[in-house]
Image 1 (tube, each protein chain N blue to C red):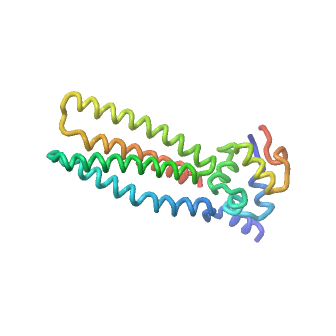
Image 2: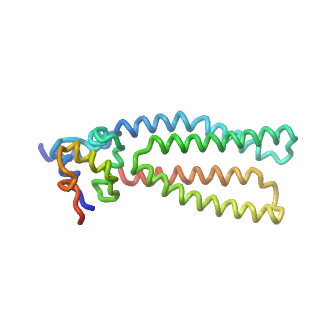
Image 3: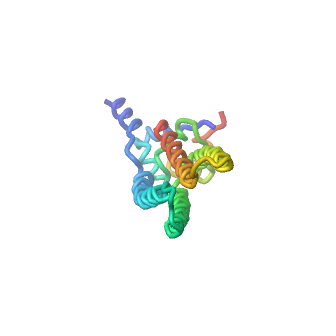
Length: 143
Length: 63
């Protein structure tokens, strides 16, 4: 009986208060940012843009980038020291991937391969997604 | 750095989440420290020692 109690205590995986509140806050922060990202991608993908649509796209891209920075800032402030370490290491990998992606897009742009405006956004969003996936995987496998 | 966190926590009958709440960190952090994947900062080591009412040296040792 005592050993069963020991096992139940040692394997209990209920979330602590910090994790629960961080999960709720991530959801609240994430929904507007994902919406902005989708809008930016959608408008940027149109190859025949008028000047006004381009202006809207630039404004949306700026708002999207700023919102990502805001979400990062809030996520870092919520995280404890171990979570910050994981986030920073994952971000380093994602940053490397974004650098490679931007180099490829720059190279393709230099040789005039298609309309690459949306691809820059995709590389940026891909980097953010990679960062989030790495953080999730690293915490998921060590629960 | 080795530690006796798991043993001390079991003696108190606390779950990882309960200990995490007492220390103001996430459960993943407690899990990582217990598994030896992460060495806590000095402030967190002091907090852990305070929660158990022990000295840092009696919880952590260089191994």
